[in-house]
Amino acid sequence: MDTKEVTGGGRNAILAHRMKTPSRSPLAGRPPKRKRTDAELHDLALGLGADWKPGDTVQTWINKHEGKTGELSRMVEDGWLWEDISKAMHLAGITYRTGQQIPSHTLRLKAYLGRVVN
Image (cartoon, rainbow, N blue to C red; front, side, top):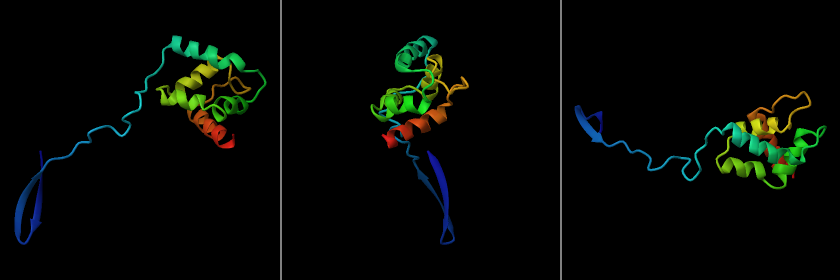
């Protein structure tokens, strides 16, 4: 129990009040997020890379998997981290032409753009 001193009318009064704690977290209802194992990332990479064609742009692939189906966002809703999806894409060869992994914050933005455009 916390106390608070209130001054007024020339006298001090000590008021006690109970600090309310939220009954549930702001993210209640969402599955907890956890880093995926190498085996899970490898399994996801097999699925994600099935229709990747080297030479395609990353945004073209994302438009297909997010803009039309919402596949990537559903994975995040089911508890996957954008970072882990990015790692699995990299394992599948879905990268920038330089071979660099797409950073998770960029993947999230590209997924958003894929939803808005399509």
